Length: 107
Image 1 (cartoon, rainbow, N blue to C red):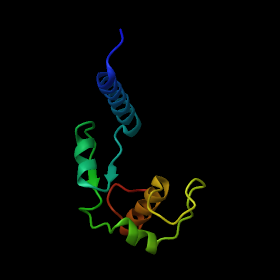
Image 2 (spheres, helix red, strand yellow):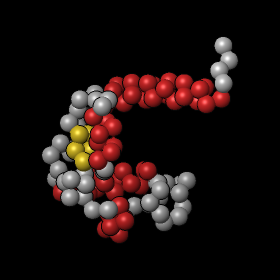
Image 3 (cartoon, one colour):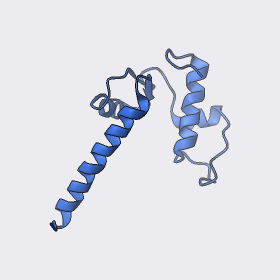
């Protein structure tokens, strides 16, 4: 059955959302989760029952500040000095968590 324009996009987004929520549930299992931002925390709380810590509430500084504090080499796809590399951002937040010894953050 063919579906008209925007309706098809809505169906694809629904399918994608269901797939990603299943993946997240399977991937994280019982692990503690750390996010930076209230909206990310709220979104994940609708999907999983794990303990979720918002690093912003735990006193984590901005990514710009962390970038000045920690040295990290960019991945090969992001050669410029910016905050758009998700891999770099994860490393910056992880390093901050290690230094501050946040509960549930064991290396």
